[in-house]
Length: 269
Image (cartoon, rainbow, N blue to C red; front, top):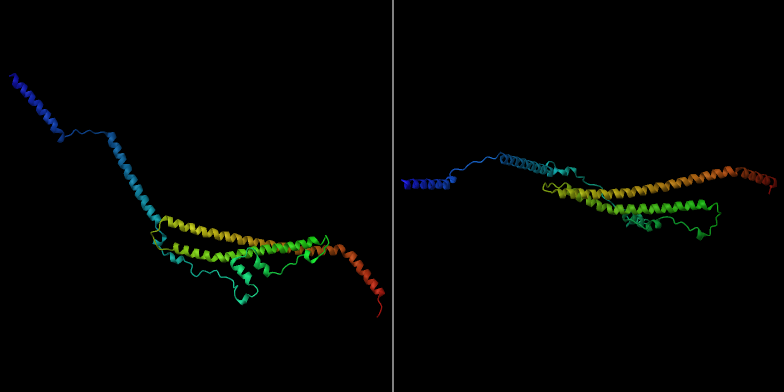
């Protein structure tokens, strides 16, 4: 009786072990962890939100990258038939005595050679053996200074005008090329290309501002010379009036004395 019971137990244990070996393939024990589930849910929600944000950003960048050519034709903003830079005639016989100065107005003349050939030369005072009193020298010196300043300002203005006219044709060609790039109907240009156009426009504008500042300086210098000339003229007229008032009594007395003597000594021829 003992042997059959022992055999039965062994069989039961062996069967249980067999069920344990085969059982996990058919049925598993479910373990639920709320913390892990919450973490996975939050991670999934954050990933979905980031995906939506990136998609919205991509769409906005695409809208920002669209050029205005996608909505309208930029050709209507083109300025046609802009005035071209012309040059002064310096090769024909129509300006027989101003060839050099016309060329200076076209290309510039920093040394003022063309201007000095055009103006009336001023004689050197020392070479003429001129002898003036100490009171006369300040008036003569002021007039000589006015002439020298006028020559300097005119030479600078002539040179600036010639350089502007010479470089104006290049500036006009650059502006027209930039205009052609700006109105290009292509919609595939990158942001770098647009920034390059903006940089080119800023460069052209900076050069134009520089030229405008130079011409404003030339105009101011001309006004300064005109002001000095007007001041010298007024000062000369006032000095003449003051001299007349100062010397009028003695001059009148001398005139009266001389006239009286002439009348007393005059005889019929």
